[in-house]
Length: 322
Image (cartoon, rainbow, N blue to C red):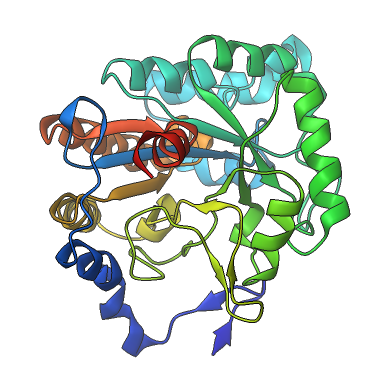
C-alpha cells in the first residue's frame, strides 16, 4: 500500500480500473436498494467547494502571468495587486456570491468548506473571523457552510473541536459537515473522532488526484468499525471527483471523465459528489475549470438530477428515507 507525502493512500495502477465501478452500490441495487430523491429525480449531484485561499498567493500570480491578454484577466490582476490597499473584501478569491449566482441559475445549491485553523503545512491561509459577513451572506442565500479541517486535525480530537467551535462562533450556528484539508484521513479513527466532535457527516473519503469511487460506492453510508464490530455514528458522503483529478487533461478528455462518472451514478441512482475549489472560478490559468463546471451544471440539469449541497444530501439520507 503506497502513500503520498501527505500520508494519503494512493491506488496502485492495477486498482485504477476499479475506481469507475461502484460495485457495492450496484450490488445493493440488485438487492432492491433504490433510494428516492426530492421531486422524483433519479440521482443527485452534490456540489462542494473547499476554500483553501481567499487571497491569491504568489504562486497563483506567477501562473497567471501568461494569461494577461484579455480585459477580464487584466481586471483580475488589478484586483490581485490592489486588494491590500483597497481592502481585503476586494480580493478576487472572495468570490462566493459569484459562485452562488452561477449555481442559482441552475436551481442548484452547494456547501462551502472553510478553514478555521491557525496552522498550515504551506502558508498562512486566512482568519475565519474576518469572513463573518461572507458566511452570513452564504447562509442567507440558502447555501451551507462546513469545516475544512486543518492539515493536522484529522487525528486530533482537540483540534477538531476547537476548529469547529471557532467556525461556529463566526457562523452563528452549528456546523454539520467536515472535509479534511488535503483530504487527510485515517480509517476508522477520523470517523470516530468526527462523531465524538458532534459532526453529522464527513465528505473526505475519496481521492484528490483520481476520479471515481474509492470504496466502490456512490451512496452515502454509515462507516463500520471492524475492530469494535459496530457502526460509527456519522454519515459518509464519499467524494467522487475533485477538480485536481482533471489537471493536465485536455478539455475534451476531462469532460469525458466527468460525463462518464455522472452517467454511472445515474444508472445506480446514486450521489455524485464534486469538489471544486473557489479559486477555480476566478483564476486566469484555470479558465477550463470554470467551463467544465458550467458543463457539469448544464448536464446535471438536462439529466434532471437533484443538484444539492452536502448538508441537503445529509438531511435527505438521515431524515428523508433512511
